Image (cartoon, rainbow, N blue to C red; front, side, top):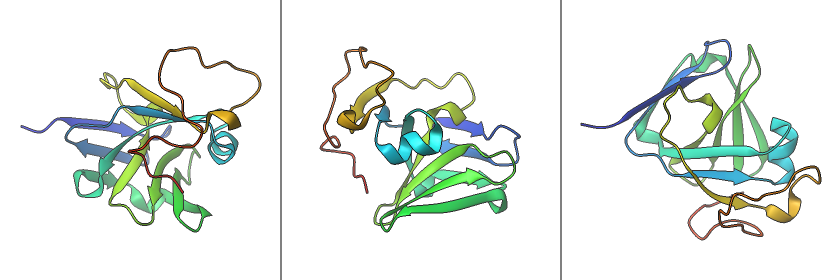
Length: 137
């Protein structure tokens, strides 16, 4: 039987169910993620055919670059999803999941771009751009 991971936006207008195993959480410190979230992104991902979204009509998509777009609830505003235009998976922000998530941190990316007001001291691998297995825009 597949694992089912559920979650929602702050107001509950957009809900999702992700079926199957989730990747470890990647912490992205790039300037786009910091500006959209107010800190840094913490996201896992799931293949598109394993993701079911209800309330998708409340999602607004912002194309932050020609290669990727970011989805957020148009009612209450939180960032929820990130999609690369050439990939068949959706990144889901870890804070959107219902507990227990079972998620664990995997790595930090775009570390040179991190905010100057915090340190990364959790012992996870740190990358200048991305990990070898995570495609970014």
